Image (cartoon, rainbow, N blue to C red; front, side, top):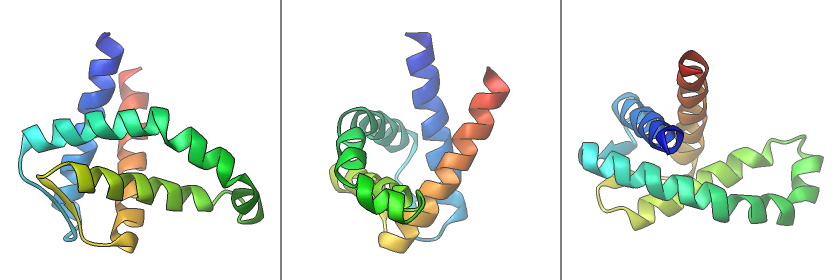
Length: 112
């Protein structure tokens, strides 16, 4: 249970940092960041594996780069559901997903 809460807070922190770095990503506050992190976690558990399997041929042809498109789609979907979280466009979502991935990987490596 503690690891799930830790991962949610790490993703929320990565969302806050991304919103402060990128002009096309905005958060209304810490509450919106935590809700966005929870929804992003659920989508990554439920929807992302299905999308990866369905787009496997495209992912293989692009040598895995299509995963960035899937991550951007997940961020745009979260922005659709969470009122206080805004992503201005697809390319901003791709860049934001890259930054969130790097930040969360670094923090998870430091924690564990």
